[in-house]
Each structure stands twice: as structure tokens, then as C-alpha cells.
Image (cartoon, rainbow, N blue to C red; front, top):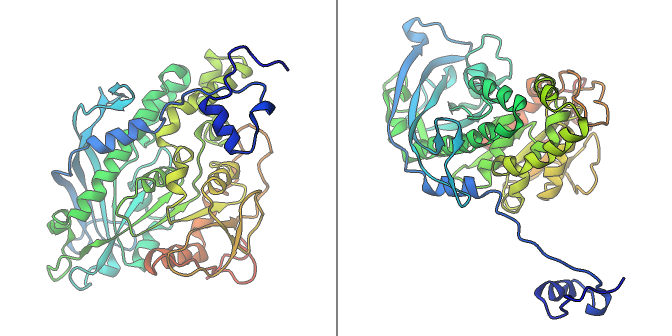
Length: 438
């Protein structure tokens, strides 16, 4: 191949290739192009967010007052807190040169759960667990149900945590309408992705509110003897599904969080969409306006530009130095294993042994791991695997099953309470439906 007339052997790109071992006379064609900072909207929003401000509780239920509360609950409180808003008409970001500008303030949802196990704890001794809910959910879906569907009530009671939560804007129960609108008009997908940026601002504001101390001196946090229960110097994070995906983005900002467990999380939204069992409803709406599957594939690929601010895969440099536990359910029908393992591989997260599979390019480590460790851990629900195609998986229950196993709970508690140690609670074999640990 002949070199173009414009080839410049002294250019910076040729020098960069030379540093990789290529001689200038070996290069026929080379080019470079600028790439925008895909994470800039979130970076700029977090930098411009005001310090945490006011909060209020509108509904407080207390078992000692005879109120109806879920199992293992002593007190439940719901309200709101004030955060900086970056959305115009609660829909899209106000962007200038890629940076998000404040548009005012917003009242973000607030939920506090105090388990029975800590009601008489000594003053200032109870750690705070910041919780991230799953897709199209809300905190009450996990903390206000009689059957404790995700084992969160049991985890909080056994671990002795006060749970504090808000919603992940963009993909909450109330945001489902916006997601359906975006499916019918893919050009409006930013309604979803921009709200996810606002959700990050809200969660970080809540975290700072807890850490600042005044918030946990509210009477809601008083125990049976009037003692203030919470220890704002001990804050951990636990996220499930969407809460794990967005939790990874939260961790990429180096927040003041002492330990974090991300349960059934992943990344690469544009790859995850059409493989998730959550997708058929939205695909149906999209097919009506974009009937050609090849055109839809291009839209999915282009959509990654919008997902980037709230996608762990866009934060791999920051997450490569972050310490957390990522739990994967084999055959997950909602968050495909492909996307979980792409994130783990990209950030150098090692796979705890024994494991169910050996993903390409992921190193292995033997359990147990000492304090301040990070790892990917696999759980096997022992259900049929999804087809190896880019089609929505059938419902199998794999996404939800492991969080109900005692071994899963004990691994989470050990990591959050014991300085980020990683245990394997299921003996010589991987944790599985037939081997759920203890």
C-alpha cells in the first residue's frame, strides 16, 4: 500500500506508534481523532452540586406505637431531602459544552429503616447502610414487604444496620413511563440517561448528608432510651441489580464509603438492553417505529454515547483502583453474565475460587481473602442458561435466587462488617441452589 501524500513521519501519532514498537517505515496509514469525554455530564454535575441541605419526614411508623411495619422492622420513615437539580422540566440535562448546569433544587425521595436488632444499641454505634434498589423499583419494594423478597430486612437485622435509601432516578418505578416513551421514540432516550445522572447526584447528596452528622441526629434515629443510634463515620453501600450498576458508578467517584457489595451488577448498557428479560416490552414499542432489526442494532450501538455517564464501563480507570465485592449469578436473565464479566475483566477484578466458570481474561484468587480485598464471586442457581444470542433471555429466576441463600448473606455481612474480607461460605464447591451455604 502506498503512503498518502499527507503522511508525516514526524507526527505525534507516528511517534506514539513508535513507542509501541512500530518503525515509521512500517506504517502505511495512521490516523487519530478526538474522543469526547463521555463521563463529563456526571463529573460536572457532581462538581457543581451544592452541599446537602434540608430534609423532612412525612410518614413515620414505629412498632412500639402499634403501627403496622414489615418483619424485623422497629421503625420505618419516609420523606424527602433537598438536592441540586440538573434537569430541565424533570426530563433532560441542561448541557453547555458537555457540562451539566444546575437548574434549581429537587426534593428527592428518602427512606429510613431501623431494624429491631438495634433499637437498644449503645449511642453512636450503629453503622449506616446506603441501599440501591433494582430496575423499576424503589426502596419500599425491598424494605416494606411482608415476605422480604430480597432478604434485605434479614440482612439489616442480622448485620445491625440502619438502612438509608433514595431512588435511582431514570429507572425507578415512577420512571417506567419515560422509558416506554424512549422506546417509542429512541431520540428521546436521554430522558432515561439524563435522569440517571440526576440519580447519581441525589445518591451522593444523601451519602454526604449522612456523613455530615446533623441528619442522623434527627429524632427518627433515636433508640428506645432516647439515644442517637447511628454512627455516621461508618457508612457502607449495598446495591442490587440496577443498584449494583449505578453503585459501581458511585464508587468510581471515590466516595466516603467504607465497604461496598454490588449484587448481580454489570455494565455496557447498549449490550445489556436486548439481552435482558426486561427488554421485550420496550422492544415491542421500538419495533413499531424501527421495524428493521439492522437499524435497531445501529441505534443500540449509538445509544452507548448517552449511557456513558451512568455506565460502569465508562469509568474503568477509576474502578480499576476501587475496592468492592461484585456478586454474579450464573445464567442471570436480567443482567447478562457477559456484561458482568466485561466489567470485571476491564477493571482487573479477580475471580474468587471455587467458581462455576472461568471467564476469559479474568485472573483467579483462592478464598478466603484478607482485609481490603476486591473480587468477583459467582453463584449458581442451577437453572438453564440463556441462549447465547443477542435476544432477551427467558425468565428463569436466576437474577433473584442467590440473594435468598444464607451463604450469600453471610458473605455480604463479612465484607461490609469485617474490613472488606472475602469469605467463601459454601465449602469446597461454588455456592449453588443445592449448596446455599450457611
